[in-house]
Length: 414
Image (cartoon, rainbow, N blue to C red; front, side):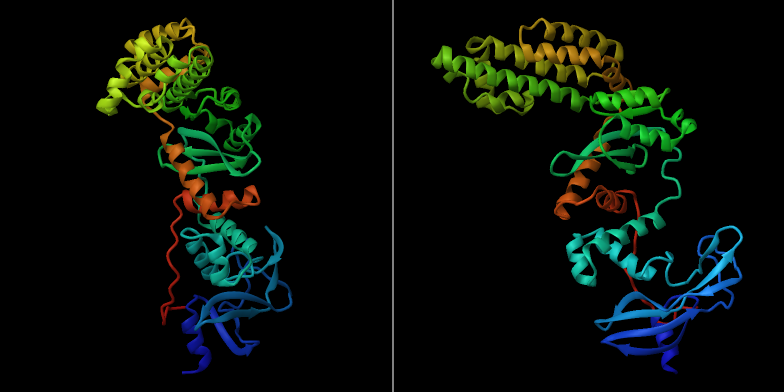
């Protein structure tokens, strides 16, 4: 068997002919060409007449026996009536402008899904920035053609990708649990860019949008999604009430510490008992809360307001919940507790979105869970210098892209 035939079998790329080879500066250089004679357009894939020939260039392939393998070829340009004068299609690389073969790029992306970019850089001996660019090309190639098609229920949330209040807006498909869109920023204009990309017809198909109580997102959704119902899930509602209770507890401690130190001592140790659900309390914490009404009526009122709202959000009868929630808002706004007065007004302002959760039980849990995964990616990468690098890695790991580990099988038919 000739050496070139053996190298062709080891290369295991269809429609590639190995003409010759040499060892140059410790690298194995394979002189290759496509098996087809007439060049093909790299955009439309059609056979087109040649235009001219460019100088020889190299494509980095998967290493062999610990050494670097380069494919060397002088690509032709074709005169395509549809695409113009473009570089010809080559079987070893989908992207004509890339300096790496497709198997090499997929090997990089496979590892990038599982470890940090610095490790990938060191394993393959390429630049950190190059890893990000390869990820962007792989995502562009392997993602579904239109991830925005068929959206009916979406979740919107923001996440920080870098210190200094650098945020990304993420849109998640509730039906698939995957990120479908991401963009730098977290204001109304950022979300409107998503609606513009979605198009007017598909915007009318959106039925539900789960968000936190961000006024910027609410404004954009009201303008861009005429048929969508905004849903505020219980997590964000109860978070507001929990924060109000915690602020009230701290305010009471500061007030009593100056006015009545003895009473202040009796309010110590209440943070965790007040935060816990009643059935999670220990016997000692039950005993501690049993004397709260006598020790501090304001804190007792705050605790009851927080516990009552949790009971309301557990119920599933919309009519019952509506009456109970209206009664709770009246109680909170007349509680003489400034933090709960503020929360009561906020809940009244977002009443319809909270009731939508009761009716449809659609939560932002999928979005929050995706945010946790994105934070892990951010931590694994030790932060990102640019939004595009962060978005590329998110799309690689959070959109359902499956990349198999690189394997070469001797004797693959060409």
